[in-house]
Length: 461
Ligand code: ARG
Image (cartoon, rainbow, N blue to C red; front, top):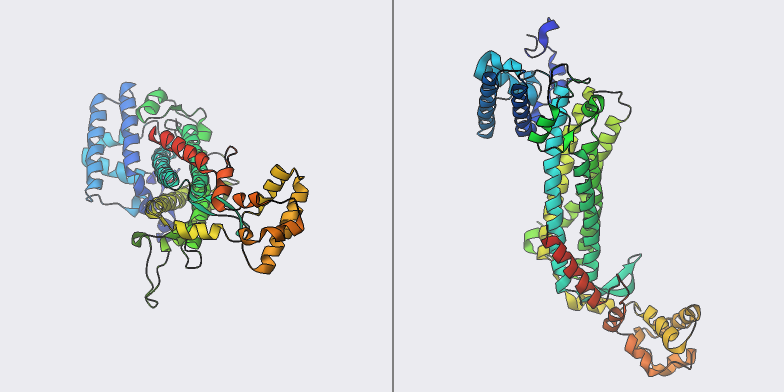
């Protein structure tokens, strides 16, 4: 049997393999709500413009509401022979209300329909990501305020570099996620135009009012070019691209958590809620949630890459290739959402082991720069000379196997006789972080101020 929605010119139905490659209903059923909302807005506009009668429009809206509840109650029978969500809904509408159903598709095509449905879905998803990013930033900023003065080693090349505070480290991620949030909001603003009424590719000869449908669906305006409107998937690619950046940031933080909770570092304790045990090694507590967040980035980048390649080289306007956007987008965007939720949970429960962090902060000659700065400030040495003198003192400490503040004064004076006992005042990690008061620096005063700024900004929404 040929397809009852478009089979007029076909003598035979599709091959089983054709049905399998062509049908999208197994995944695009996710768009049922958006599809029904779009159809309701469309038919109400058709009635307003007297393209269909009020009576038919009411029947159609009533039927669509019935379908919505059938789907939500799990009573709806999805059919692969009907290909996609659009034709599944329309075919059921015909069963429910009879011939009036056939008027719904006036001045519309599945091409503008799917573009509208998918935009609505991506828009909701962007709003969810926006909120989730805000939740994560809040969890980080709250922890940062509490630990504004707790010292930890700061690293470059993953080698101890200079002491920083744990709060400062967490706020670095708040900055990253704030930029991500900006990208999500920017993408939403740009994508909020309505393709409905672009029809197959060229627009329609019916006197439709595209502003009306755009407004009814919460769009800022109708899209201005029908060819672009039906063949554009920038909105989902932008959503995935913003998500890829978020995934990269999440993965970096996840990696740090994995490192921090190792026995060798012991900087943080993960809660039982976000870790797992080993089936053979009873002592183990593994940071599985962090590892999975780290790994999800691969899927998210993959989705972005798949869509970029899929769109590349497609001539205007719609091609069926574009049906392949959905599974990738659903998977990529669900993955970033889940990773954000898991990270927020982990951060909330994360307990820093401040003693261990402080001890580590003082090792590895991490206050060498403070010593060099002291030589510049107090003895008036040029920085390059101070760097050299400090290097020689670090060399002494290495030979003696002691930390910098344990090198005796007379030994230091052998390197430079002008050094006085006052130098020891800058060699502690607390003094070191407290002295970093330059804007954006790690001093607890700065960190507290920045944490409060974020908390205030986030409470404003
Ligand atoms: N299921 C299709 C998709 O997702 C809907 C649009 C089909 N349009 C067409 N001309 N065959 O892209």
